[in-house]
Image (cartoon, rainbow, N blue to C red):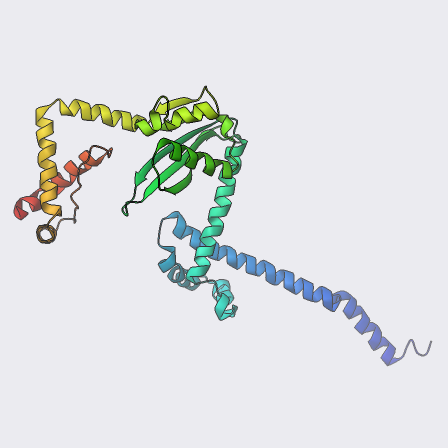
Length: 312
């Protein structure tokens, strides 16, 4: 009884109660670590928001990312992001080109998984594809899928792949498309339509890409000729029968070539636009295989007509 009322015993009881309220050292460490983990996740979410803004608006993530972080840090009145970056190790502060590139790849992986999941859930699909040549004269093949979103019930068109190709014959293009989509676990037996341009490689009745899809996956697959391509062919055919239009387009091509193919004349044309305080307009080369090139070419000449006259 005497011991229970002693000063040392009472102090020990108070210390024990305090420890019970505070929890074990291990629990304290775990609690602090979990709080720190959540704080790190929140700050990484801020970094991802910044990088996604650049991706979404097609801005250069390799050159603008660090500057954007600095701006956001100055605007962050809570100072959480600046403190987070300051406390990071110098080799892991997440403001480098490597970090934003990794964020880009991670964003791409998540978006691609979500898109492919919706395509895989669709009952039927349509395949749209076209091949072309880039500025470096490398062959490219673009693949898009049209499907019905099982959640919203809305028809949806989505980009799936852009492939670099070496061969442009029907067999090679067919194999490129099939291999890529099968690697993405897309069931090609659900294909009901294929849409390409009217080139024989795609539309050939016996050996075209569309014919190969019918032969391998479903004889009921319908080939849809690209409407823009069909309309362009019709417009070109109609224009060829009108001499005035033919002469105008020929003159337009000659005029654009005369300016653009001479560095001296092109520089003079740009300087004159500056003197007239006009917006610098680039003359567009018209072409039969580009849907809007003729109208864009005419528009560029009309908008820079005064400068063109002075240049000539």
